Length: 116
Picture 1: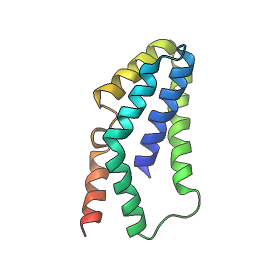
Picture 2: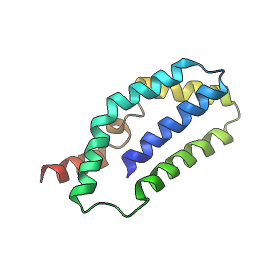
Picture 3: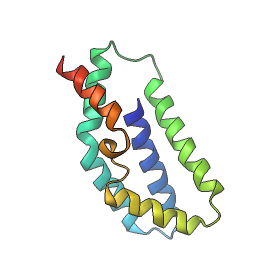
Picture 4: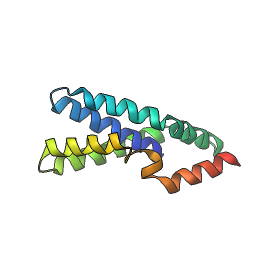
């Protein structure tokens, strides 16, 4: 679920920053690139979820909602919204928010489960 939450964080904030910065295309590009770098991890999460018996209805959506809510709360607390967006963009572009960077322990567990 954490992987889907990460996806929601990147998607929500890149979309929000795209809209609040005058439609700066760098945010859409960053989101697309993040997705391409992380699609394999998202697929792994789905395979592990299935292997462990699936989810109850709404669990993935709840993880995505939680992730989106958390990043929007951080944005709303930021004194300088433009600086927050620029910093977020830098973190997405650098790969710092990629699943293998943000959640290495959970990734390792997912890989171990998938390999069983």
